[in-house]
Length: 223
Image (cartoon, rainbow, N blue to C red; front, side, top):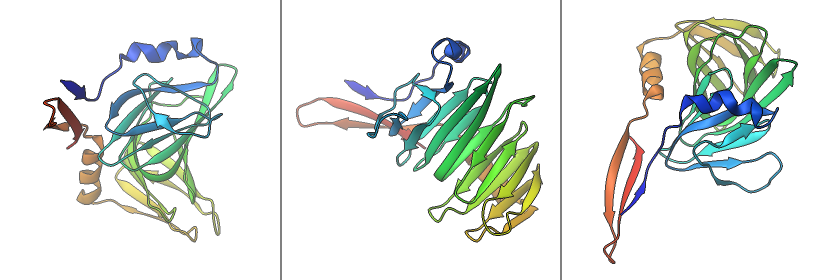
């Protein structure tokens, strides 16, 4: 029987990444279903593998009912949910590693450790967010507009279009930047809390598939 499933990677591997390459940014610690990876120096996508080291400029994308967990060198974590494309950047300055994740489209949950002298940013087609150490999620639809919900901590946000408005989003609030660059910050209701809880889920369902030749597969996908 063949088993198609997800795996977990020991956290200890993350602490050894600097020994692999000075531009290492993080490692894929969990993969569910269709997760693809494209190195910065290549043009073709390939299947991501558990433990794949992510370097400056590498891209990750997920398919339907799929998930990728990326752990950074500082133990920050992002959850790349289904039908999402991200590019991960990291620039090393002395003993610091400044991180910037570009979300082309899709949904990304984040748990960012407290940043001392380092930067941790998320960029979308319409805005950029500077994270100080917090939890929440992003939603970037196909039109490039942006929504961020902050569960804990505070996020500084700036529009990249129009008047290039700025603001701070504290816990329990959400912000939107539309395609014209207009920034709005409002109190979040129960709907956003429910979305955040769903964003953190990584339970799977299993389907047993039996072929005509008798061979069986177990397919696992996000619940």
